[in-house]
Length: 207
Image (cartoon, rainbow, N blue to C red; front, side, top):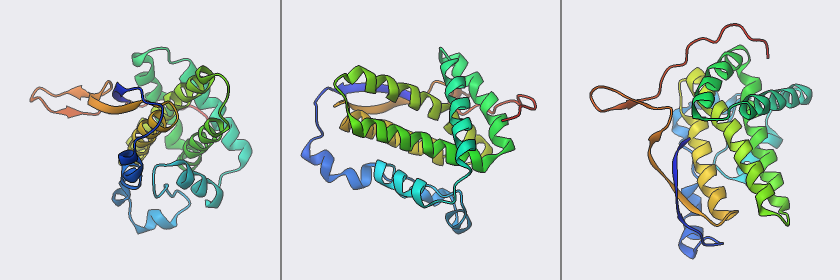
């Protein structure tokens, strides 16, 4: 994920933040065409909990047992990624899996987001428990987003994740954050530009 800087620690969003919510959580849906909109691999119209829940509840889903297996698989990959280098390598591994069954991992990605929203909505006495779940889920989604974007050649999944990270940090944890600089997996070219590295094939790995 792009570097994140914590800029304030207010416990709730300001009135200005609330008024701008409809634009803050928008997703750049122009990156996919009408065929994608009609397919089973649709994306939320906005990067928020309601639109994500609506998508999950109305989309033609993959079998639930396969979704559960996918979530367990990605969670294990993320758990084994203890640092940034491991996370970049995990993208290579996940990209190979995504290439074999794109629809499954598409739905798996948004199911992880929906389950995180459900957990955060329940609240709890210990904020650290919710923060841990938030961290683990977003780490798994970061790995998936990078892999899914590479396979599809678009940036919809990472764009969604960035918006959700900022929105949840603000609304749930009272921290107004923003992206600064480029992501840690983005390499700088000799001319000063940046580009996301292309993952190498990780071999044939069964989901």
